[in-house]
Length: 477
Image (tube, rainbow, N blue to C red; front, side):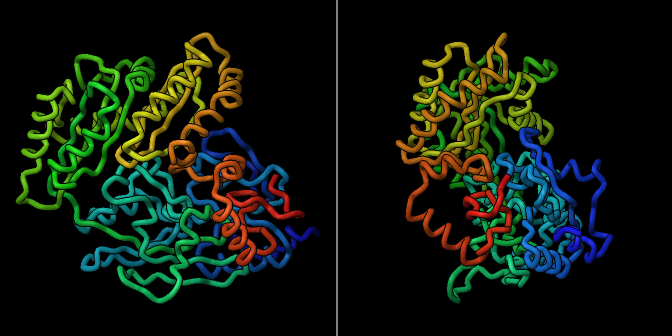
């Protein structure tokens, strides 16, 4: 009997899954670009069972891949293809432990699906601000492990800003429980920060205390055509001033991105009659019933149109109208998929430099292929743009994308770095961006990351080969 089989034989059989048809969904990454292998998937029902699993596997030198909703774009939750790593899924740990409305907080299991938590908060007349395209399937533990972003970052920050406390099973099976939902707790190192964005390489998050906010009483959503991409930061600044910093989302959509979607789904309609090269989806919200947010947005649009900053616009008249605006934005990635997929660049720069980055990156692509289709969109209110390259009609998708990845992507990442930006705004590192981290990561930061990993996980068996390179003797596939 192998070390792995010995461990599995001594675990509760109810948590061990070995059926190949079931296991396969845990070993294929979200984008279906990478397929790993695992002897079994473990689905613990409690923190104690997670501790039991981690301690037993560590004692036999077996590596662990923690998994939430398996929605990572960087294969952070996918096992290697050597078939030695065990997947530990938190999906059965999905209880809401407490909602403290007076404290504007909730304490939850890590396996709770994000939309479940949003609904629970809404039932208490509150809101969990984290909002992602995958919220119907992603889990809060994975959101925290990858420091998820989403559409509300400009107002509420990334997942990191919403975490008040964490409960984590460490690589030796011991438990760090710091779930107190306190805003002020100045009692030494804020160690929970180590696990936010750590992608499961330092431990398995089993619980979290999260900030809530009051549910908006007013929400105003506008779909705008702008005259010049260089005016993005000016329009954002104006929007914040006119609304008193009530802007929750400020999304950029290029006309080419929208066209990819509309070509494949002709039943969808453009929000504005005349096509424009550049669009902004703006949303502002307030929990106050006294402030006149609609009037503030109307005044913003009147002012912006009077100076030519905005050339056309539509304000959602009702919730259904609002959903139509957001349906277009949220399905832009699907439009890319239906047109052969894309080479994705998840980058960020200062909001003041965003337009310059888009213009220069576009020139880089055009110099390589004048027919390449650029799909550019993203959460530009916080400097995050998804700069994606789609194969032109008639191109062989695989060959075209390989050529872009080899010759163009390095130039785009170098441009972001030269502009003081990041090659990974919200997707994380996982396995596929280790080379980029080696090239663009600060040496001092990388040294500390390796030191922390070695201190907490000296054998390197917790999600090996992700974020920090595996030590000699530990296979990462």
